[in-house]
Amino acid sequence: MSSVPENDWKVLSGLKANLLNSVCETIFQRIEQVSSDRKGREYESYLELWKLISKQDDAIAEMFNDLKRSNALFKIAALKHYGVLTDEQLMLFSPETQDEVARLCEYRR
Image 1: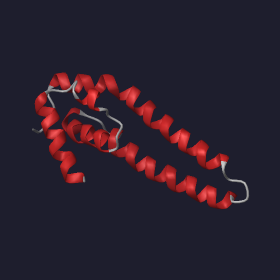
Image 2 (image 1 turned 30 degrees about the vertical axis):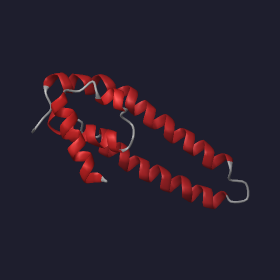
Image 3 (image 1 turned 90 degrees about the vertical axis):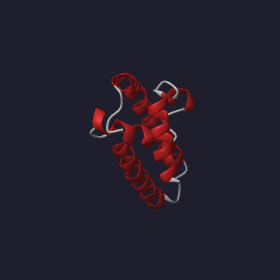
């Protein structure tokens, strides 16, 4: 499958904002956790935050940057791999797309 069906593209487009907000909220919670426990280890906490943000920025890029219909299948698989897309949300996509996403996720394990 070179690109997802039109209906699947519409589903992904409709979910995108909420999925991105969910990822960002999770990152903010982790940042708050690290920064609230920094007393006496400020520099180590800073390094931990820098690594966290850098790693999460890479994940966000993989999931959301340059999102278009021709690469949507890979973006959906990335969303599933990182635990952002729930099983219930995945069920909104066509069976063909679900099967392709499952195959792509198998390679990532």
